[in-house]
Length: 271
Image 1 (cartoon, rainbow, N blue to C red):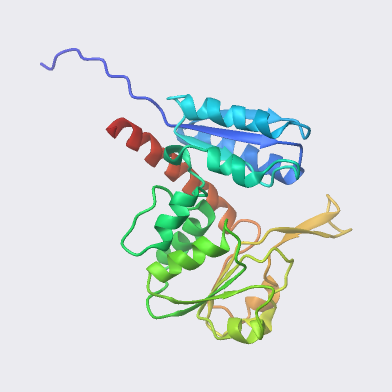
Image 2 (cartoon, helix red, strand yellow):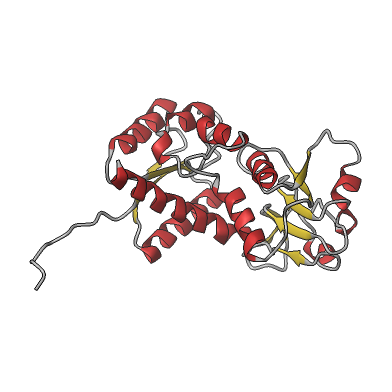
């Protein structure tokens, strides 16, 4: 008979810091907390008013950095304009940077042969979608529309790691439509509602739409509807695979956030 041994295993913990009352940010935070509950991750949260000072936000981050029950820290973006976003994100402990925004994580991602502690959740979710859909990446032409630190840059780096030939398209890119139309894989993350129309898409291409934009619609109950950066109705006529908005990349982003949090908890047990 086995001896009577009791074992306490600590549940992963995710802390979310919300500053202000943006409806979209509040919605994202509620979705993340609900997802945590569903999988057994302990959710910690601090909601600060729009008028909170930068030092107050940094104080909350420092508190979670020091808390051994917290394995991941997420500061919901965007922050109010009077707060230095870079300073706040840099203050998050590298070991708890489950959003993958720390310069060390981005730097490791950019270098061949290196492994970041965490990869940004949305780009990581995009790659997961591509791989699980059986999309070949090696040797394919990929276009990333948008060059933000949150999506565009890490998405391009991840595609390069998979041996795709990557073009990053941005507001100063000449012949943007032509370059996009040559791509086998398109990741749209430009933040402009339905900017990418059907003539931007190569027949048979795979399209990942990261954008989420509210456009006025008097026929909708809320007076608006959500659309992506891609004109879905036009693009679906050409694409072999395409993600919808909402319901495509968003759930994958949350899934990758939960995975990163669990990885952080495992790493803490090893140390």
